[in-house]
Length: 192
Ligand SMILES: [Zn+2]
Image (tube, rainbow, N blue to C red; front, top):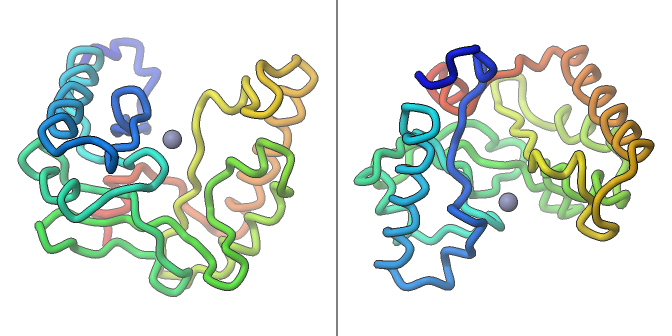
C-alpha cells in the first residue's frame, strides 16, 4: 500500500467516476474507458484497485452495471431502495448491490447534500436511519468537498465550515447512539 502513514486505515476508497461524469450520457466504449481510467488512477495512487463504486448522480443502467465485474468491481451502491429493503443483495451479474435509502413517501434520501446546502436539518437523517430494519444497512452518502464548499454559495467561510462539521458530528454521534455500526461499503456487504 502507498498509504504508508495509515491515514486511510478503516476506510475504503471506492470509485465515483473520473470527473463526476453522467455515465448514462456516454457511449458504452467511452464509459468503459473512463471506468478503467478511474480504477487505474486509484490503483496508481493507493496501490489497490477500487472494489466498490457509486455512479455519479445515482445514475446507473443495467448495461453499465454489467461491465463492472470485468473491471474488477464487486460492489455497486448506485441504486435506491425503500427502508425495508435496505440491505445488500446480489445483482444478476453476480456483484453485490448496497442500496441507498430513498423514502417513497417523502422522497427523502440518505444523501447529505440537502443538509450541506441548508435545505434539511442534519437531525432529519436520524428518523431515516430509524426506519431501516435492525438487520438492514443505512448508507449515509456524502461528497468530501462539501464540508468546505457549498454548491449554492461557493467556498465556505471558516464559520460555515465549523457549523457544517458540528452538524455532521452531532448526526454521526446520534447514529452511534442509535446502535449503528460504522463500516466500509465492502465490509457491509461481506458481513451479510
Ligand atoms: Zn457525486
